[in-house]
Amino acid sequence: MVDAGRRAFFRGRPRPRVENRPPWARPEDAFVDACTRCDDCLRACPTGILVRGDGGYPTVDFSRGECTFCGDCTRACGSGALRPADASPPWLLRAIVGPQCLQQQGSECRVCGDFCEPRAIRFLPQLSGTSQLTLDATLCTGCGACQAPCPVQAIRLAIPTPSAHQT
View 1 (tube, one colour):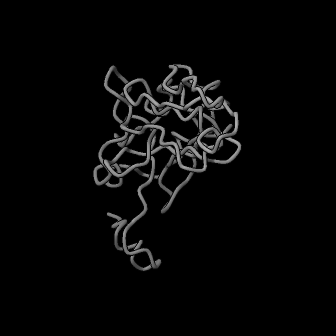
View 2 (cartoon, helix red, strand yellow; view 1 turned 90 degrees about the horizontal axis):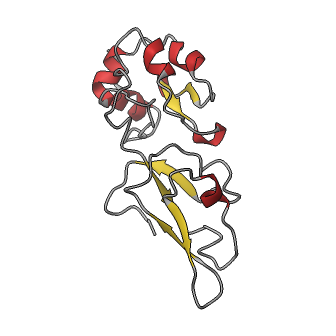
């Protein structure tokens, strides 16, 4: 068994970085124990967003595209590290918009909203002229379609915490 915390300590990172695992991944400890790092899920991903992360374990790189929740990665996983794709949520990831967002800085930019299929990102008209970006976390699927096209990389996908900056 690989201890991710120990590996992070020896690399000078006292707390291991939280990796965005493939959809329907088991909880982190169970995932790391079960994953054989065979890359079958990486090869199965039609959008190419699954890449080798820390220690060779698969992680999601939303700068490469979005997750379509097709389930190909889960069907390719023979180790049980990924649960079968079903009606349960694939993960808890949600879009988080940072303060460098052009729209929040007063510039007109709606790229993220154009790519958001569930319409979780919307723009409310304001008297000031620039619309206000709103993000409805209940509609956000965490697919990542909004992250790659953002011209200033103001969007990241993470499990929301009470301290996460969201608008």
